[in-house]
Image (tube, rainbow over all chains, first blue to last red; front, side, top):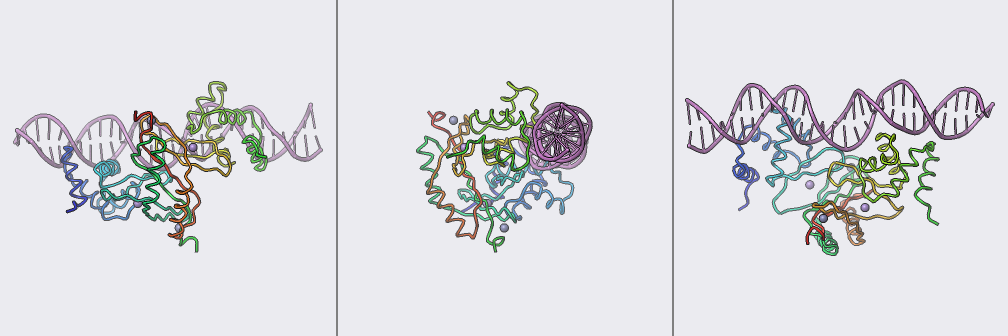
Length: 143
Length: 143
DNA sequence: GTAAAACTGAAAATGATTATCAATTACAGT
DNA sequence: ACTGTAATTGATAATCATTTTCAGTTTTAC
Ligand SMILES: [Mn+2]
Ligand SMILES: [Mn+2]
Ligand SMILES: [Zn+2]
Ligand SMILES: [Zn+2]
């Protein structure tokens, strides 16, 4: 059976000796209920609506923990803000980004991934991770 | 015949009504004589050796002009610094980046590029540019 | 219950980059 | 060569996202 993200984070927390606090619970709930690819500030503003009192330093700190625990992935689309997306363990995808409206579409392409491995092998590299982003104009903005 | 980068920048400058200054000449010479993928600060420090007096604001401004003129490309490898690399008109390449020693290897792969176009087409996107970076451990650091 | 260690929010600090501004310089027209 | 205007420059201040600091608070093991 697949562990829930909440469970995964709890396991991570206890293995690290982190304490359980209501702030982290609040942030985790909001993060999980939110759309993908939110910036730290966007999430902070959402959280403040229901839970004023939570400081932005805590949101920054907590999102980093989510990434470390494996339930989130840090991404940057070049707009100067770090974003976080939900990460399903073992899954991977890349992104199409609309330069006009900011829309983000996810895709997976096994052939591209394979070719990347080949390129790395040809150069003696051991790949740890990669970043593939296609920037352009989306269907909506085109029509 | 292929225009030199110096020529290209001069043409760009005059078409934009930019004036010719010794600072820009100095920065252009240093940039062209330097290795690829230098950060603004790295270039600034190199320039200061021979030409103290040049301010870093000018280096920042001038590198942006180089990018605008088409002789340089802005790149970011996630270390928080913007880097600039020489750009041959019409050419394109992607990067392998060593997470241990920082080595950067360039590669081109026509098949990957084609597959990217297909992915974009399948999603109704018109691609403007893309970013493909493979992060890992290089041959040297592996052995 | 107590004490040690982790956590928190507010505020200050950081680091890369950009904007401001007064002084300098380039250059087109005389 | 002289002049006027607009571009350029370097120093400095300002931004902006993120991180650090720190004093007070909360968790949790004993
Ligand atoms: Mn995604
Ligand atoms: Mn390159
Ligand atoms: Zn769009
Ligand atoms: Zn290496």
